[in-house]
Image (cartoon, rainbow, N blue to C red):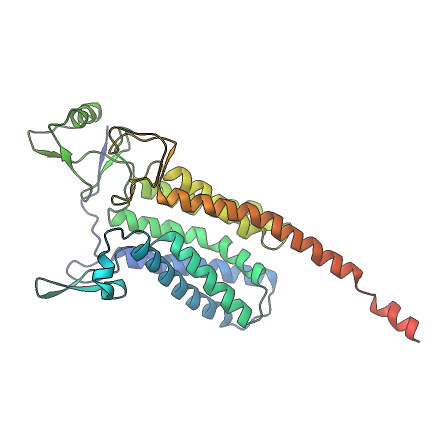
Length: 332
């Protein structure tokens, strides 16, 4: 009635070395997104320098990492750890008990990465005098498939797991919080999933493998809709960017109901009181991720109207321009 986390999966590619699957998944994600971007450039026959797309991606990665890290150490660091250890914000090492230990850059925020990427994208495209909304449409169409690999990296790290559940595909993650075996609700869940407590003081209960939910829906599903359904039917520039914001925001908002809320933050908006937040939930209690996703959806809806209006104005401007041939005849 439940699954165990594969014991052959480890965060390190080679035990003892600071080479992790999570980092490799990021590299694969960037490669996939870059390949899809180049394919769109070729399809559109855009005349750009061969290094233009590569340079753009370099600055997008810088923006992504900076934004993702900034959000993680501000919005999600409620205990002020990074205020006390500011170097930990940018350095993947820490001094623990007098020894230098590799910790990695623990904590990256998707929404922060999105903001950082968008800012870097706008600045680069404006400096290079490239069509901003045409290129952002191409980028958001290519990006989601890369998310699949990022979420698989989360799964391999056994992090960002979901809430306690009794569904048959619920999984026991080795890094998840354990609960006192003596509590009635813990016993009830264990019985329902057929888990033997074995007299131990603590129990690690099955959870939703929410990383895999996100890998499929935020990655494969969203990419397929944008790539195969909407890309060829784009009515105006900026439409795909708006559709991406709405699509990702909606998908992530729903999946957040299955994810474990951030321990220190919980529910910033809690309209319904629940007795046991470890297992119980409500559709009317919202996490930080859901609040940010709601803002994404609002921006996407607003974008539809704004970009459509810009497209109409552009068409009217083109129609109002005098025909050069007729103008020459009049001059003659």
